[in-house]
Length: 200
Image (cartoon, rainbow, N blue to C red):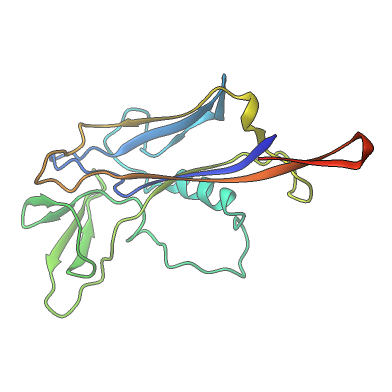
């Protein structure tokens, strides 16, 4: 039996739409077999169906749960609101995707849309790469014993995600990339006559 306890899907781009309103991730959810995790979709926009990002606050909390760092103040991270789940940038009226670290400096974030406005920086800006991960913790206990979801008894794992607008695609576009990481425990079964069987 394979017990999946954490599932992390990283989206290199929270939003790759360069339309004026942007195309933020509105919500996401996992379906494992016939069950949904979490029970309600993780909201990434201010209201259901909105173009305005909530900064990915709920998504970051889910990631902290999956990494078992939620509320652990002994740990620090370089991830903050200027690096996590932001929309394409507004540079001199044009919407651009950030693909070079610290080439621009942040000036304002529009309150109505959440779109950052930036200016070019020749000496090194303050805005690094955008990052975002749609993570889920499947732990069913406090982590002392093996726990999680029996992956062998489930038919499939699906990722359900809604964006506010069509994402940018094509040869000249910076593509959205999806990378998936699964943390699982393999079960050792002690059978009769002291036969040990590793199921993985």
